[in-house]
Length: 114
Ligand code: AMP
Ligand code: ZN
Image (cartoon, rainbow, N blue to C red; front, side, top):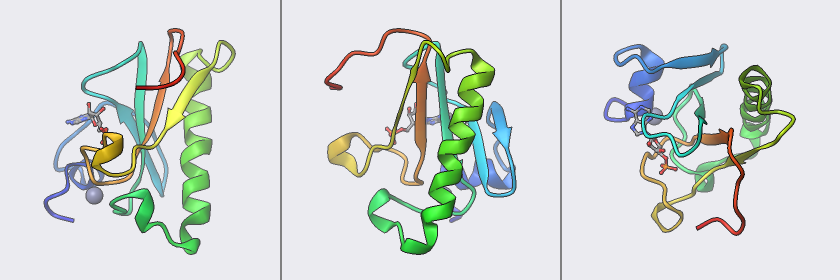
């Protein structure tokens, strides 16, 4: 999608601070971090929201989590623990409509989330 910020990251038109990349997945540091580690893990293929997922996307979504796990290990937050989450639509706080898995860690996480 030409008007999608995260698709521009994938195409290389804009360069984020990349921490992981493979053929299907890109992970980069959030520009406005909410924790010492705040990484966004995205599929390279544009999917707007969780509501748009198809059954064919199951493997791709699994790859997002495997990438998050690897980044968490590299960031040294695997053992203390970390949070992963996907906001779906504006009511949950989604502001960029290219699906992204937040990986947050490096500080205690409260519950329930806001
Ligand atoms: P969400 O609110 O779940 O849609 O998350 C969008 C995230 O994208 C927010 O945490 C923003 O801080 C982050 N974000 C917005 N613009 C950029 C950017 N240019 N580079 C990195 N992260 C960004
Ligand atoms: Zn996109």
